[in-house]
Image (cartoon, rainbow, N blue to C red; front, side):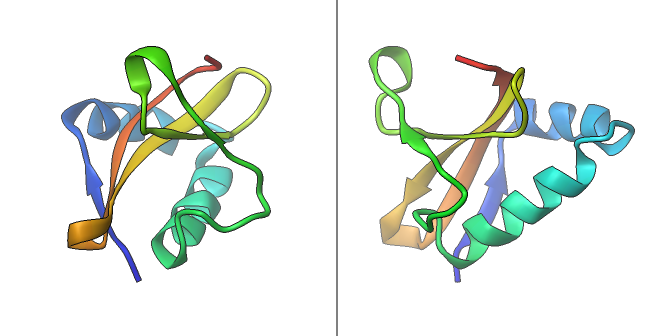
Length: 85
């Protein structure tokens, strides 16, 4: 089981998500990430360039959840919820 850590930006995004129709989808994804951040399905992709090492999972056509896996600590840091990259 991985520990979830939320960046300040992710905490701000969480307030917006709490009032949106994406809340159930985000909660489901966070549970999956807690158990195994590399589990498939749902699909994910490793990012490159500015966000090398981060993983992205789509919430819908417009938004995705971006996080980093810290294996030494068995934790995942939620970076932010962003417009599709």
